[in-house]
Image (tube, rainbow, N blue to C red; front, side):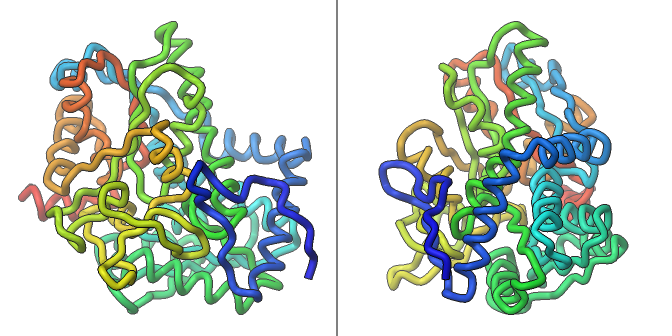
Length: 395
């Protein structure tokens, strides 16, 4: 096996989060991926192709929309929404999925394996594969398949095989398990497009790199529109791809950065998916990070109305930024997220994904703390969650 050292950071923060905890069968594919990624970053032709696809296929740059009626309702002087809901396929996931699909084709891979929770990453991977002529297989927990049926149909329409995962809770954690097993069996032909900033190195850095287009655009756009930066930047956080994508480009600025986790329906272990307060250091899916665990050290069950936030671990880079106090992590409950979604719908005519609604729910708290202006990442649109909104809100 090749012994070349990774050329990208393998650990994050003072706690040394991240790393590469992977079985022997995956070490060579991971080394090959790191090498291909590093070379692609320095290749102008790859960067030009990616930029062109992001513009003409994905629809970038996405708008930064002022939300004055909602701002006034919540006690803010200004609120700006980074509209990832307006990308092709309806969420930020397409940025990373398309970039990784291009990287896979560059590596000579003909098959793509992916996992999905809320379905948006699966749809994005399916669309990217259809665009590039790659075979795609997506693993999805049966619980998530039931609550995200429209996205299952979209994936299948794009020609992707959706494999139900019945183990455990039938959610994202189990889908990742099965996707990793499938990749280990077919890594000679297949590339695994991991959807969030998780997993063994180099995935956390790779995913974050492909998602920072969100924050880079947003920072330039708000300076152009207002002439100054906001008091606060806020995003929802499951594994961390959306949160890092928006927040990392603002790390050098004097402002407050917030990530919002899923508070679920209660404070007890198993009733939420908030990792910062209740999590302990552990290893899951190839990386060391904050992880919800029971008293015996087993990965705990989680709960959230939002499939995309229903995951027991926080991405290692986002966890490191929180522990090093560069990002403040808050939590919003299921009920708070539902209420916040109605605020945006009725004030601005925008239907947010339940993931994004968790970030919206914390805006009144920011106003109480004296922040005047906020920039919020609208990670995706709420069409996929319409059945949940209907059943929970009685509409």
